[in-house]
Structure formats: structure tokens, C-alpha cells
Length: 372
Image 1 (cartoon, rainbow, N blue to C red):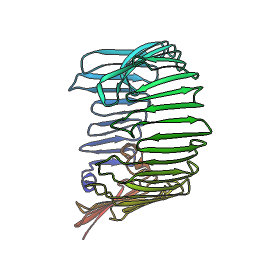
Image 2: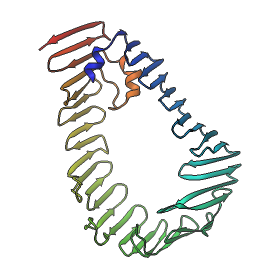
Image 3: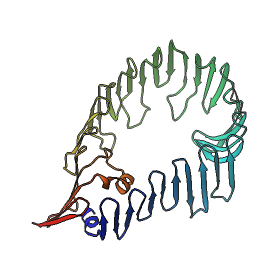
Image 4: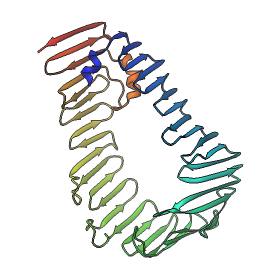
């Protein structure tokens, strides 16, 4: 792929202009690669079925369903659903939207004075719960008998459980029935910020000064691949956290150290390990080492970066190696930056294959090739 890009270059004038069969760039004003177009990126970018301008103006369409949506966040939106229904809204005055921010069939008027939305019951997509709110977040009520006068008292029905609060978040409690997706029947309570407890058929959790100190144990369901209990201790969170589960073990001493060991689970091979130091400044994987932003190296030699000096990428399947100096962008996969900006600091490029190597210095002003 890299050799093809290099050899098909038809015209290049410094870092400012570049043209080949499927690519045209007048940097930093314009770049087009196949179905992607950038104009003074990140001010404007478009793909085949969507475009975005100024980061908050967005348009997207689905020709197969004759649907589209347009928005100027957070003030205006309009569109048409796959069923041919149109919708629009001018926030915060009035509007309706079929799906936004996990809410379905949203309607609002003079928000936060009134809004209404629905959400599917867990495990039952066709069965929905409709909620209305007046003077959000103070008064809310739903058609499943949930209601609340925040922060004084509220009750929430969640399929097989009932959650309640008084003087939120100081006092909260819940009662659970047997549920196929969770940890069985039981109850929980918390007096924040002092203590709390969860006691269920397969889950026991003790909280002290939540969320800083907690001990959790969750037993697996019978007749499942997961035969190992889940165990977690936080002492105190987020600084010290330890987890044991069927799929992995994890120890975190934030922000100094983190260790993750993944195990084989059922028929899925997950055997791998990760170590991090200084949160994510140093990351040691089985197949890769990262020292952000300075160093990235892979065990199979398919990628190497020494920031800000060089980047070496190898396609082992096609035996092609691509090298460039400088490499100021510390993010590996960023095609927008590569199209519009990276050429300004890329003074040298080399593409090497088993037959020959091609070199370009100062944006193609000096070129030479070596035959092996």
C-alpha cells in the first residue's frame, strides 16, 4: 500500500500541493482522498453520507432508508426517520426527537420546564416506560408507577427491583427479586458518605465511606462457564483496587502502577498480560511497548515510533517498510492529520520492498532509488 502511494505520485510542490490518482491536497486548505473531503480540517470534513462543520454542525443521511438528520448543537435539530416521519426542535423552546442521548421519543417544551421520553424495559425492546419531568430534575413520574420529588423522595421500578431515595444522595435503598440477568433476590442500602451494604443471592458488598472503601464478592450462576467468583477490593478507591474474575486479574495502584492478566475463558483464548506505570505513560503489552508520547515498538517489528523524530511502519504481508522523519503527531492512527498537516514536518520518506527502496527528501525535491 505504501509503495503504491509513493510510486503513483504525479505531482508534488513542497508540503503545499500533492496530486495522484485517488488523492488531491492543497494544504492546509483542502484535501480529498477517495470519498473523504477536508476543508481547513478540523473546520469541515465530509464522507460519503455525512459531513461536519465547526465541530458542532452535523449532517448524516442513509439513502437506503431515505432518512437523514441535521443538527446545530445544542440549539437546532431536524430530520426524517426510516418510517418517513419528520421531526425538529429548537432547544430549549420546543422539539421532538426519535432517539437522542439514550432517550426514545423525546419531546420538550421550554426545557427544563417540561420534557417527556420513553425507554425500553430491560430485556423487552417492545415494552417501553414513558417518563415525564416538570422543572427538571425536581419532579418526575413514569407510567410504571415510578415518581420522584428530588431531592426529598423518589421511587424507581426497574423490572424485578425497586429503588428508592430520601434526601438524595444521603439515603438510598433497593429491594431485588430473582432476576435472570443480575445477582438474584436481596436488598441494598447506603447512608452516604458513611456506609452501605448489598446482600443478594449471589452478591455481597460492603461499603465504607463510599466510594472509597468497598469489598465485593459475586458468585457465578450455576451451570455456566464462569465457575470462578468475582472478587474486588477498593482500599481506598481510586488509588488501590484489586479484582479477580474468570477472565482476568487486575491490580491498580493509581497513578503509579497497573497490572492486568487475561486468562482463557471457555473457547476464547485471552492469555495476555499488560503492565502500566505512571497511569498510561508507560504501557507494557505482550506484543507492544509504549512510552507516551516518545516510544512505540511492536514485537513483530511492524511498527516503531521515536517521537518526534521518526516513524517506521512495516506491512509484513507485502514486505513493505515505510519510514519518515519527522513524526510530530504522537497518535498512531490519525488519517485526518496525515492528509492535512503531517507533510509540513515530514522532510524525509523512504519506502522499501524486497526489490528496491525509494527515497524522497524535502517533499520530493530530491529523489533517488536503490536497487537491491
